[in-house]
Image 1 (cartoon, rainbow, N blue to C red):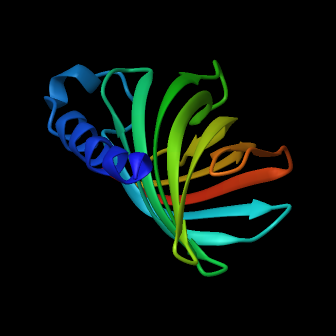
Image 2: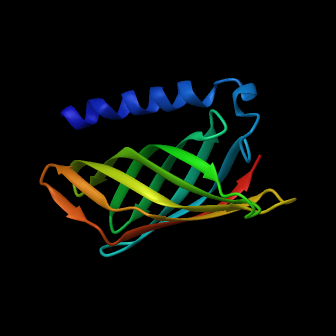
Image 3: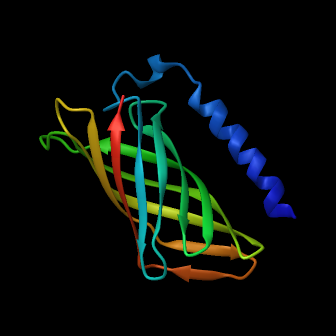
Length: 157
């Protein structure tokens, strides 16, 4: 029951962060992006919509809803993003966030750290990213899986 009450809190926090003023993002590579997220590696493969929004030049929040293997995953994350000098649109990122897993009548809670690279195509509204995304399921049973990765394809605004 405790995990279910956490879901509305996550949704409210995401909504509050998404309506912050655009002026805070003046140095960010883009303001907001929408696209497809693939979570793959050891275990199942999950696919779904994804949104990422920069609050400042380096700070971003992202959310995704993923489907696969009779499980639905709702996740939000904070990430710190930094451009790589003299590398065009390439930047590195690192972050963490909670995920709620729904499936087979059960609800679970996981923490997902991530570290990766994102490439914003210069002169085009496109971005692609690749992350190492281990997961740690903390309830109902504890489980850790290091061999998980994320792949994103996004349209940027």
